[in-house]
Image 1 (spheres, rainbow, N blue to C red):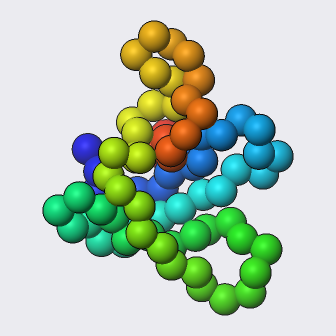
Image 2: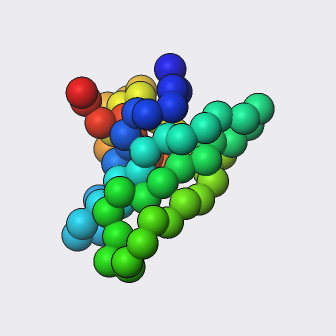
Length: 74
């Protein structure tokens, strides 16, 4: 379940340092977030569609996801 305050990590394995985001607010079909890992100074915000946020870094078939963001285990 997607909830504000949860942290997600980028699923793309080609990236050396995956991007991490924290969900701030949820609307009907999108979530507003804050980047937690960035090389730029200051706070950076964005929005993402809810279908890009996943509970697991793997698909139902057990393959690693290549797109979206997976929930970090707390």
